[in-house]
Length: 122
Figure 1 (cartoon, helix red, strand yellow):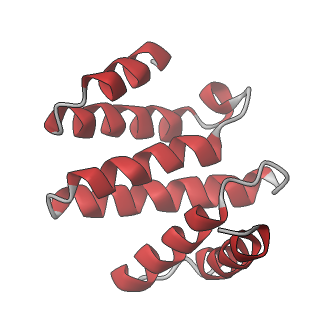
Figure 2 (tube, rainbow, N blue to C red):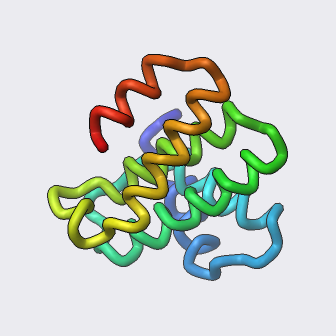
């Protein structure tokens, strides 16, 4: 994707994520658009945490539907969006939940590399 496309995905995703849609389809679309735009560390912490939280919610929904590869991707993005030096202190609950869910989902996929990666971070 070109830089212009990434910017467009991110802007659309941010607009949709700020609405925190109740409709599952819109929630998946919003988070997917934000993720396609890539993690933007220049966004303020509140927006990044909102997108990380929504990635976690969508990951849980995907996991409930047995879409484990998709769920793992959302959990990984949740971790990436919330990443900061203080994520374990400022956002402990979300950081822990995203890591535990990533490990559980990676186990379901028998993806030992990802299991090790996220358990090492715990």
